[in-house]
Image (cartoon, rainbow, N blue to C red; front, side, top):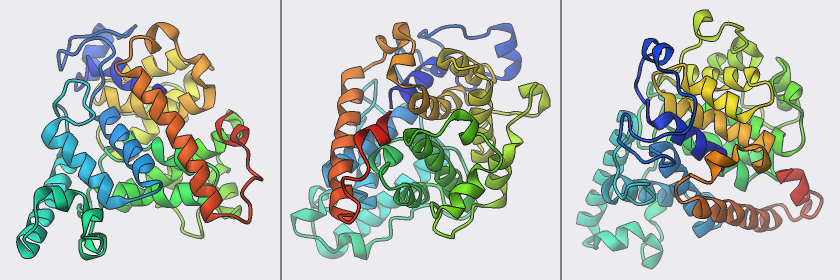
Length: 352
C-alpha cells in the first residue's frame, strides 16, 4: 500500500508527459508541482481508489462490490479519500462506470421512495439492494488500467487464500472495467503479490512458467487467463532496452502491466530505481509507478522503501493503519471461511 502511494506520488508531477519530455527532464526524486500542482508526497486517483477499496474491505469484513462502488462514488463526488479533498484526476472508464452506478441508484431510489443516504447504506433496511442491482457498471471492451492501479488491498486481505485473492481481483476489476483483459490482468497481478507474500523469490515470480505452475496448483480455479495476459506472464516484458524495445506506459491495461513488470525486472533490487524507471517511461507515469510499487512494496518490504520518500507521503499514518487493519480483518475472514485450514497459514507466511 505504501509502495503504491510512493510510486503514485513520484509520478504525479509528470503525469501525461510524453517520453520525449522525460528524456529532457528525467524525474530523479519525489517533488511537487507539475501536472496537478500537488505538494510533494500527495497522490492521485490510484491511491484514492485503493484506500476506498481498503476501507470497504475492513468495514464490510470482506468483499462487497456494492459498498466499493459507493465509496468510489463518494471519492468522485465528494473527495472522500483524496489527498486534496476533491477528485481531480479520474479515468474516463472509471468516471463512466461511477456515473452508471449513480444512475442505477437513482432509479432504485425513485422506485422505492428512499433517501440517498439509505441507498448508500442498504443495511439500514434495504438488504436486497445488492441482489436487485447489478454492480458490473462497465461494458465489454473497456480495458484501461484503472482497476489494476488500485488492486493492492485485495491480495493483502485475501493473501491466506490465493484462489480467493485471484477470484476477487477479477471481480473488483469488472465493477469499472468490463473487458476480460482488465479482469485477468488483475488476477495475474494478484497471484504475483500473493506469491511474494508467501515467500516466492523474484526469479520464481518472473519465471515464464510461473502462471502455469500456479494454474496447476489450483490458484486460478481452472479459469485460464486471456492470451494477452498470458503473453506477459510468459515474459513479454523482458525487453532489455525498455522503451526502445516497445515497452510503453499508457492507459491500456496490457501495456501498463507490461511496463510495471519491466521496471520490476530491471530494478536491480532497488525500489527507488524501479519507481524512477517506471516514471521516466512517460505518459501515464503515476499509474505505471503505482502498479510497480504494489508488487515491489510487497516483495522488498517497508524497510526497503526510501525513507526520504516514505516520510513525505500524505496521510502515511492512515495508509499504514488501513494496511494493518486489512491484515487483521483478512485473518478473521480466513478463519471463518476456511476453518479447516485456519491456523496452518501464519502471519509470517503472508506478510514477510
